Amino acid sequence: MDFNLKHPKRYSCLLLLILIGSNLQASDFSFSRSGLDNWHEKSFSGYTSYQLIEDEGTNIVHAIADSSASGLFNQQSVDLEQTPILTWHWKVAQIGRHNNEQSKSGDDYPVRLYAIVKGEPYYWSNRILIYVWSNQAEIDDAWKNPFASEFRHITVETGERNVGQWRYYQRDIRADFSDVFGFVPKQIDAIAIMTDGDNSGQKFEAWYGDIEFKADVK
Image 1 (cartoon, rainbow, N blue to C red):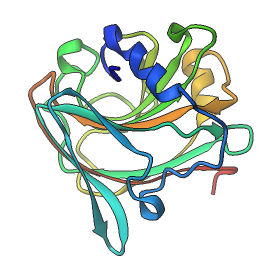
Image 2: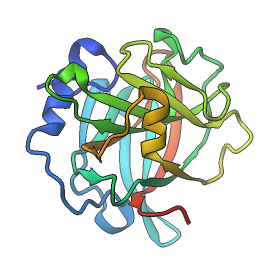
Image 3: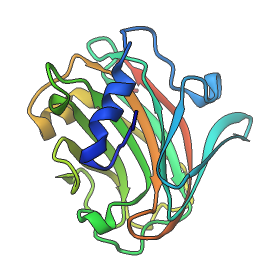
C-alpha cells in the first residue's frame, strides 16, 4: 500500500494506511519521551535520512535530504476539543535556492509538519494542513499544494534570517483549518514530518524537536 504525501495519484492509499485502525487515545508525538516509537517511514523518491540523536540532553530527529523525499508518519489521534493548540520546534541548516514552492518542480521544503484529518465518507474528503518554512512566502500565507487541492500549506517561517536557530511555534489548529478549509475539525487523525528536495534537486539538513498538543497557549 502506497503512502504518498505529495502526489495525488497515490496519496489516497497513504491516507487509508494511516487511518486504518485509528482511534481516539492519549497521544504522544514527542521525540524526547518516546523516540521514534509509532513513527513509520515511507519513501516517495529515495530516502531522506532520519536519525534520533541527543541534543543538550534530549532526543531530537536529525533529517538530511539529498534530492530525496521520504517522510515519517504517526497515526495517533488527537481530540482537538480538549487540546487544540499544536506546538513544535525545528531548526534548518539552509532554505531552498529560491525555487517556486507553489509549482510542481519547486515543491520542496527543508521542514514540513503535516496535520491530517480523515474525511467522510470518501478519501477525497480528507484534508491535510502542512506547516512549512518557506524561502520567500510571507508568514501566514496559505496556498494549495500544486499536486493536490486537498493539501494546503501555511508558512510559519520564511527566508534566511533564522537559519541555524531553533524556532518555536504555537498554532490554534482549529483556527488554521477554519481559515484554509472553511471547517473546524474535532480531531486530528495523524501527524507527519518531511524534509524533501526531490523535485528541485536540492539538499536540506534539518532538526525536529517535540511535537505536542496542549489545551491552552502558554
